[in-house]
Image 1: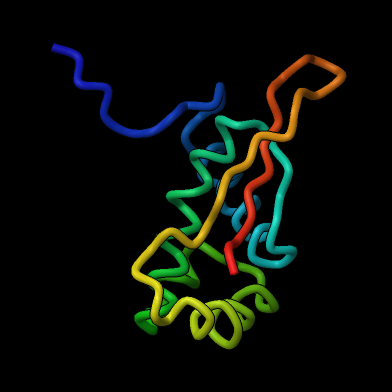
Image 2 (image 1 turned 90 degrees about the horizontal axis):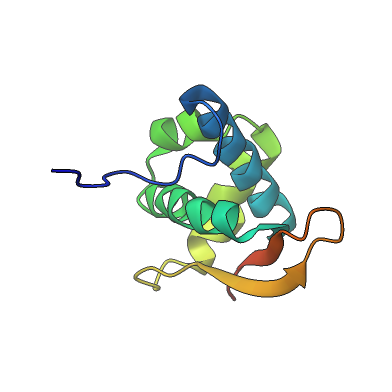
Length: 114
């Protein structure tokens, strides 16, 4: 019986997928919005929200394992964690913005909510 556990494979290997999500989360926290495909945005949503929750609880080591950029690491603990301190979850929002002209892939904007 197939249970379909886990997330989307995104057409890449596991290590590539992990690096992709880490890099996209770093860009999301730095710029507070990222335009990408809908599938990648939906996968990034859960990954980024877990990192913000760990930052809210002061878990520096767990956040450091996922975010390797010192500027973003500092921003997480000084700006983003206090912003979402009273929010129980739902820190990101995915909006559909149309299709990419090159391959007609559906694009989405993932952003941090205020």
